[in-house]
Image 1 (cartoon, rainbow, N blue to C red):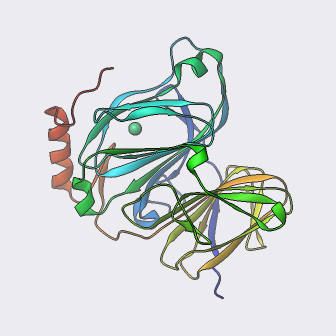
Image 2: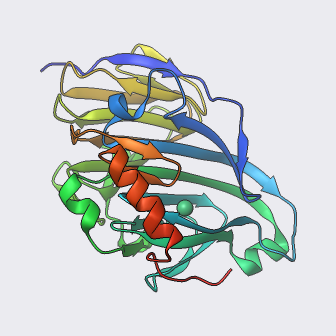
Length: 292
Ligand code: MN
């Protein structure tokens, strides 16, 4: 058995606001060598660690904006988010739910705290992950997968010390709920103190562990505190996570697409020329219409 070893343990960067509703730490692509090429197929990872939003009559969030060429995956831990997009997709996701939106050949959307939740305020905790698409799939039509917590299959950890929620991919024979264009593993791992979870991803997979709550040890030696992201080397297949205390971690793995990346803001294409075209299409209203 060959071990996938730890490449680095990254501390959270200073948080910043996206719109007025998401207070996030950015991990990909803004540093620690975790640029889009190294993290392929993952091109962006923002984490809104648990943060209290006071009651607000006006829901906070991000107004209408475009995306093209990739997928946005929103994983809700605390709080509720309401989405609308120009392809007619939309809905509310709450605790334990996942929204997997394929921007494909271009979409407009907006992301706000859900109205009723906003009136009461509360703790808000979410991850937004951007997954790149291969060139051929950047042309696909926009699509929206609303995956509720009860649709996500769980695998029990040994000794009843927790669960692995299989959002995408496969964990020990249990398939994930999301359909993906390229092979992706995405798991929420809820661990009680003393739990151990074992994983087996291909050597080639870009693999990372985000510690959302509590602290864990990776491969029995590398400590990873709350809000830290552990990047694994591409040197083996097996790795394990041990919980010193109750913990919640997000495990992500993906087969690199290995195509050129030309990215600017909300557009991620393969060439500079395609980026220019994306801006033109957006300016010409070709991504449809969405009310503010
Ligand atoms: Mn967006």
